[in-house]
Length: 108
Image (cartoon, rainbow, N blue to C red; front, side, top):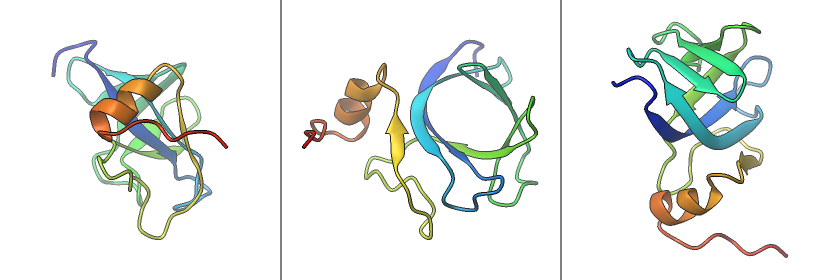
């Protein structure tokens, strides 16, 4: 994977939250090897499946996260998970149109 490649991804905090942690859709960048992900001021290192329900570790805090590509059907949380998924404003239009293949939902 080329360095500085950017992609919209799903990020969910697992530490202390099981399948109901804070979750968001945002644009990340990858290290040259692809084992490190950068999102805003966070740096995540792949733990290669050694975590319980997590695949990345926040280098600074030590918290475990599940980070993956967002699903077209929007079912990014684990089947037992729940809670809102925030979408970063800078990726919202691209997420809804290119990934979900629809228009964004309208606010009430």
